[in-house]
Image 1 (cartoon, helix red, strand yellow):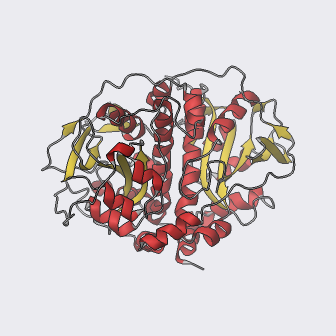
Image 2 (cartoon, rainbow, N blue to C red):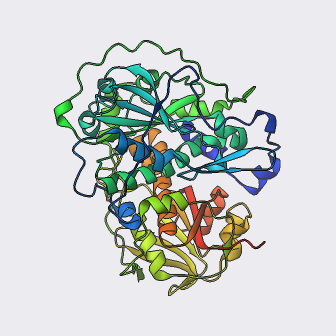
Image 3 (cartoon, rainbow, N blue to C red):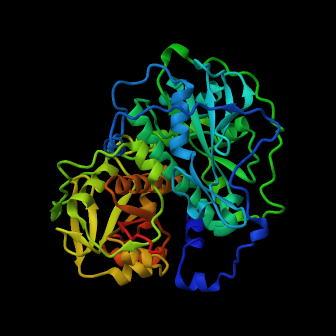
Length: 505
């Protein structure tokens, strides 16, 4: 068994593992939710974002930008992308003075361990450089001056989207900011929580006409060094080249000496989880030749399965709620009313979320590593039961009819949310197939794509006037529950959706 598969097995939840886990939250060392460079001057980002031309559902479904494309990427466009993917959308102050920061995308435990960095050439209103995005004050801070896009081109073995982009975002995770609560399982959350951010980012980019692509194939050491990361604690996860501007091709990058920039300590002390670092090291790429081999192994679309029983019936006149409005009002539902949603709403959400992800590990957006299974508790026009989603045909295959609310509640660690929800979406992946093709790094891809699809389902639910929340799960119990259809697959992500219950005074 490979190191990455050992990691997956050792971080599975089961009834026995939860009973045996003696972990308690040490509130005195709860980490800061931000990475702060105290000695660097902020470069404020503009807040006059303007509007998005596409409705939320259209933007979520788009895998390529809506025309017309932006000929130039300027700070206003960058500010929109950053705000609606990883920015602070509202705050709440509790008695005692503690402030809760709500972000544009969902995050496990609201611990916000994902940071965004920008590597760009000279833009109309921003000098070439390497920057860190600070959500706490909505500003950039320059870590390096100069055009370092060539470093990313070399690190990605001249990935075409990176080579053409005037700017590239880099997602990173600081392990401790999530492991404080979730221990070694936090490595899964690196991709879950960057995936929900990227679901937002792709939707905004598509609506704004900014070409964007997910790039997981890169030399880890080169990208980490460019950003000056302490790789015992923080690592690069994904690159997102933005825009196409052939007139500003990147040249030879300047030297990049090690960075020694001070950051505010996250906690008075931290707890190390070596299993996380072992999993990341095992799935890292060391040379451009390794990156080329990774990209050449991209997963191709599968042939459609046998005709499924129930074809999707998306709403003919879906809500036209604006994407900005959906993101600003998105949250994580804390309670669901046991009221049904319509089959049209379910169909519309599934259709929007399943139109593909532009990524280097997929030969085309119609390919996928994620298989979606459903527990339908209350959907008007669809029999209660369990289903497998046939993505290629846009249809649902009934696996077993019946009321499975109680089972749904058990599978999500015994929480009422999944039992009360109208529908639960489980994203599973055949890790044997994925890792045989893409190696241990395929695990990152499987987790990330499932989280992006889950993030799209999240947004689609709110665009339809519903609520949604991400949940964790008993791994092997979910696989067994959907077997024999799901035999051999691993659970990557779970989203519950339905009618939110209104709180009473």
